[in-house]
Length: 191
Image (cartoon, rainbow, N blue to C red; front, side, top):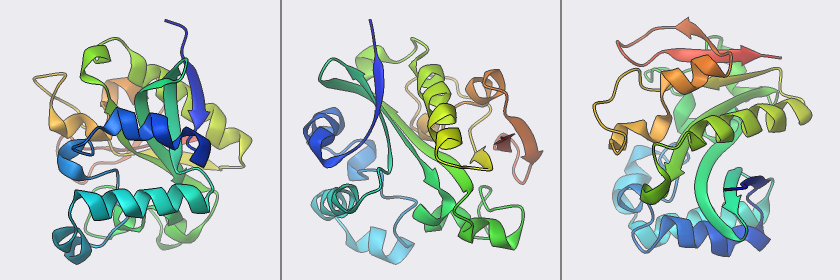
């Protein structure tokens, strides 16, 4: 298949909505887990999460990239400045920035989430998304790009893989910069 990678803009909302389906991907998250405080997440349902991410897409800039097969989205990767995903920066998380000021620095970027259609998983598409994300971040002035993937998963359908696999990031040239929890390294690619 000839895939294209494109930033999620309002014009591509229908493709994103189709990819996430009625359930909103990962149990109705709509890729809001790292955007909303835990108390808000507990109160929200999938419709409120969908409304939140739709408003975010409409406000811009794009909060991530779609992997498109013509007009159908088969994959999604949330990428952008760490400031756009505040919960990813909490000091207690394995994804917390190395330095206190990195979370507020617009040139400190991160890849926080993936979602692929079940019928295309296991075909190397995460590699394509990360490669596209590296180019996207570099072109927009990122100094570095962080990720906090999972090291091991018994199954390509594992819900834990929403953060990506270390193997994918290693192949893209990311290096481990912190190991706060076994199996969940903080990895970085510096530009």
